[in-house]
Image (cartoon, rainbow, N blue to C red):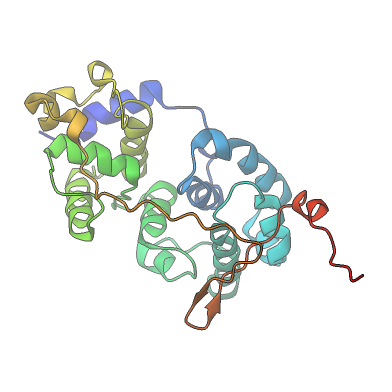
Length: 259
């Protein structure tokens, strides 16, 4: 039984009022998708508004320096996303007449945009019949299908994306992708999911089998080793890790002096 009809009815009733959903543009979609990677909606909201006020168009972003872009991103973390966003804007202006390309394949060729972002922008901004699988979507689909393989495995994620692709309706593919994400973010939660409020409860294999709390399965991650020191040099081949010192840390460092 297709999940799109009931899911889209639920989405139309309950979707959150988010700034990138108001008068949406491909550029707004691109910015929001990169900001939301590994970051909560609540954390992104103030950054999105400030970013759009400073860089309202793809051209204004492309004309900015990398330092200007990362400075406005400061505090949001994962700064490679900001650099990738600017690189994509520069390439779009140079190679696509100042606009984002409409196809998933062409979007994926922009520097810094991976398969997920290309699929999300293609579906949401341009109505392409594709599906973008994020962490929320992986949780929803693994529970719906009772998938017991780890969602950290590439093969499992390919399987889940294929399952999502089969469900994409011919109309409103972008809303379908957003509805799956919305369901994972607001109802199909990692802990204490709100199953009675789920529009897909009748179709959920995990709910029928009583395994909702056990899914999705994830690989056990090794705890990081904490190393403290005055000066740490981290190398990987010829590459050296650089981290900018926090502003207040400079005041705590005393200059070396000789007697």
